Length: 456
Image (cartoon, rainbow, N blue to C red):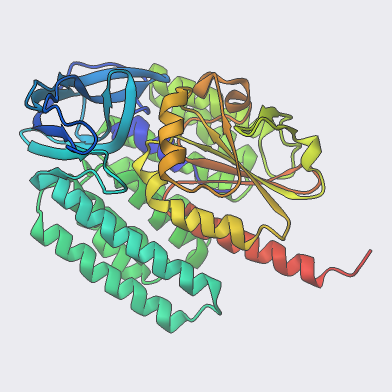
């Protein structure tokens, strides 16, 4: 069963908007300014007022404004953004109630960014210029290229030598991002991504890179998880448990110690040692009184009771954007990929092409993909569907993260995908960095088993 990466990262470091459950005083401040205009052939009157530029985060499914500005008649605007932590936050531009475009903005203390655009964009990307945003774009480009090359590798006979060359090439480019943009969020993500790529390929080098990773890196726990999984594959689960225990005990930050204990819980769950996972979970609740962790522990106990591989998947009824009503029973006899996503999530957008390729490649397994948006705002969803192709059937959950189906499937981080078998039983949960590659490997195995099975 896949790990619960995003939720642990969010709890400990609160990087991505929508993952915080508390509202501390703002500690990060940056500036965004720019100019928005309209093409003369669309509107010949050069009055560009009333463009609304909004930077926000999601708190329990509710937008929380971090910065907002309106353009003047010349199209100029400026705003100060105040955020609880450095990170990636949705940026939305609308005019007179009509959403025009959404992107993500890197917010880091002291950063000053510029945005210029002429509408309609006609397919052009919205570019935000600053050192932090340039670093993030450089990182994104590296990962997009890696995902594209990896997909090509997985679609053919897996060549270990070619895969090694791909990893080496990607590591070199990630290192160039670190060197070109030191101390930026993009550089921090690149450093952690290097650990993740090395883990399972060159464990010795991965451990060395991990030891040089600062604990305040926003993806520190993802790197922890990558090392833990690599050790489990190479030396067995007990070796991974010993490493996690030693790491937990030497960390100075009490919050990180609790987060590593949570990773220990997940290590037991991944190896289907549910009794050991419950014991480790009880230990976690003795380590902290933080209400966020208490809620996490409660939800994980729910997962142990109701959402383990082999258990019946929770029943659901959804209505697609095409107006079709679908139940879990309607999909019996096929594999079902139940995907929960946020349409403005940069992680989801980065992997969308790879995800679409998987949905199409295994459609004849047969695989049915249901993409459930937990953004209840129909305008935002319409803007997403106009801009992006999404294989599968689309659903908008009116209750967002509080929608009954999201609660039944214990959705705490996005994107997350549940794979359900033809008999309606859970096969696994996939989330976090590398989830699509693991999903691909699972689908390959299922396809091979289907081909080898004797006719009934």
